Length: 119
Image (tube, rainbow, N blue to C red; front, side):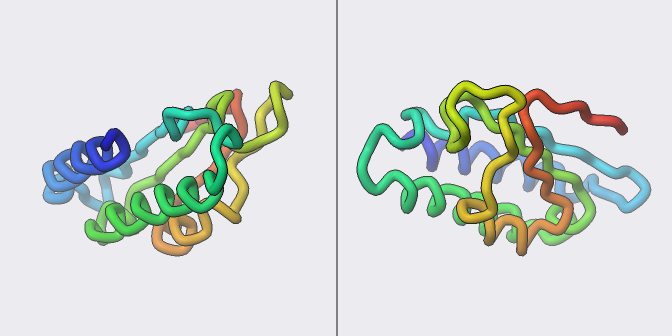
């Protein structure tokens, strides 16, 4: 399915980068939603599936300890991700969905949309 295909591609990318990550070369990954194909809330039991997808991403990133520890991950929600309707700025994703990722990736930031990244 689509989600596992995305995770497979991310794993290939992380494998390629894992040998390149050095403490002096701080890397940042910016992920921009929508994080699912179907709008959140449009199907029953979607909360469980949404959380499971974030848990799968957390497990994938944790397979690469240097990347998980030394890189910054920024997640920007899209219009169909969980949140408050069409209100802007759209708040960052709630911890109820992303708790395991936040535990496994210390530099994960769930920001508003729009947001500004200062590097």
